[in-house]
Amino acid sequence: MLEVGRAAPREELEQQLAGGRVAVASRRVDRERDDFRIPILERARQCGLSPAGGERPGEQPARRLTTNFGPGDPSPKGRCKRGVQRTYGLPQRARAPLVAMSARLVEQKGLDLILADDHLLEADAQFVFLGRGEPRYEKALVEFAGRAPDRVIVPLSFSERAEHRLLSGADILLMPSQFEPCGLTQMRAQRYGALPVARRVGGLRDTIRDDATGFLFDEYRADAFEAALSRAVTAYHHRTRWDGLVRQAMRLDHSWAPSAERYQQIYERAMARRRGEP
Image (tube, rainbow, N blue to C red; front, top):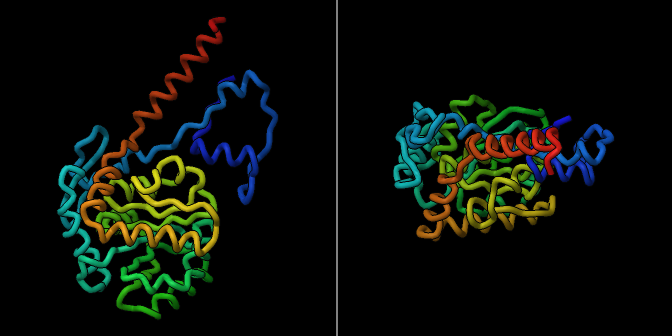
């Protein structure tokens, strides 16, 4: 029997080894069956939309962005950033990184790390938290925004269009998740040139290369998150290096093509096994 998982490879391994905070149904898998039980990364379908106008197969141009841009010339992203700043009433500051979070406001998403970071507001940055969720986190974020209303926006709303528009203008995406079976937002963000600051778990580990297409940290602690975000903000102020990181992230292929090729390889192995071939 062929069994192929759709979780990210790292998350599948973490579930098998520890379980941790993730409830995973345990089941017995014999050796022959386990030989084909290979997790394959769930893809973002290249985000479905493209900030560059859909230059890759299967993509459609993202509409209602301030402008389109691509890895060949990401400089028009600055216009999208100014558009986001106008939308949320933030000062038009090109030198301050725009840090976004788009997620369900629940414990899994690492909000406790963000709210416990006493130095977060010391960063010369702007923050937009897009999403709805548990009342305790909504209340805490609104109070957090009240401490710096000219730099922190918490609209307590979500729509897919708003997310795409936000990512098109954001410089940094926050994903300090406790666990993440796959994660799609980080892949969308990379396509839009917003570099993720994320915990090295599950699909985040599989889709982000530290200091290359994002910034990763390991321990689920506020100081570890703070250090990773600090690295990202420092890199942002070195424009030549930052532009190179943005281009690398935007060029990543998160389409279904690599996973489809992996599926084909597994099915070919299964058919060979069925025919008695080694």
